[in-house]
Length: 316
Image 1 (cartoon, rainbow, N blue to C red):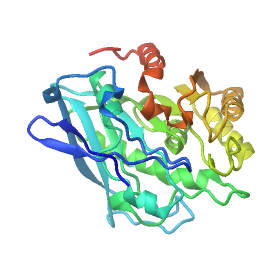
Image 2 (tube, rainbow, N blue to C red; image 1 turned 60 degrees about the vertical axis):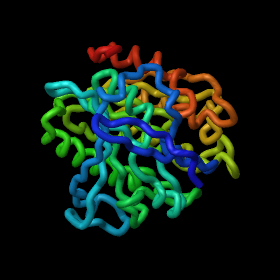
Image 3 (cartoon, rainbow, N blue to C red; image 1 turned 90 degrees about the vertical axis):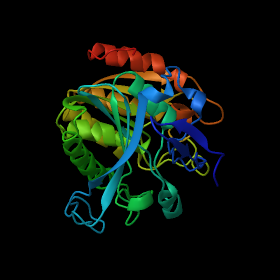
Image 4 (tube, rainbow, N blue to C red; image 1 turned 120 degrees about the vertical axis):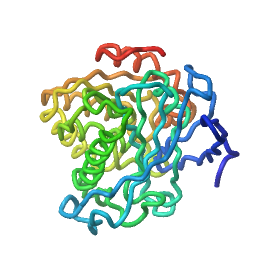
């Protein structure tokens, strides 16, 4: 089911962006209304386009059916201000759904208002539609196991490999400064962001984890995610393998994780040596897990402070 289209302007033509309804199972597909962004540039100054990059070879990365390099392509939405020169990148990682039909329906562009907000701060925003979604639908490479037997690393590794390939691809673009940028991820994408930092992907100087986790179900197991202890161990592993600054953003009424688990996960990350700040965002409507889309102004101040500490400008 789709909401009415939100239309925004490219420099030379119009693009209709269909907003998808977010499922109660926890697939936060990064769709939002036009009014969510506090920083709005004139429409003609923002360029939005979709490019195709080659699928990396994922054989051996996951226990799922491998996808060979060149067999498929990954669609990448790029949103940027129309300015000369090279500028820092911001990779924006989407969440996931356990349901194949939902994964197949996801299509670019996604996160339109948030992408424009980041572009207004000088970032080249790169949003990949990862393998298993939309036009790249196929085996569920991000499956992390049944509820009673979670193995998070197996599902996250293919996404990290694709992010590595995306950064290599971005380095070939004439407007990207590949030596300096951020990875921002929501829900499952938050795990991808932290795992990418632990994998020491080139050029990444900081990561933002928004409502990160896996195994949640707000309908059948509210605030009781599957494999919470194994999730804690995964976050500890990320902390042990990365010293990059990180920002963790969770809402006070996240119905997938609750409030206790995210703080336990962050504590494990820090105890293992991770470098991060935890910000508890306010409750949002019936489920704060979707606050990234539904109440962007709630996290804008924390984002501004974080990028300022890294030396990025905080306004256009």
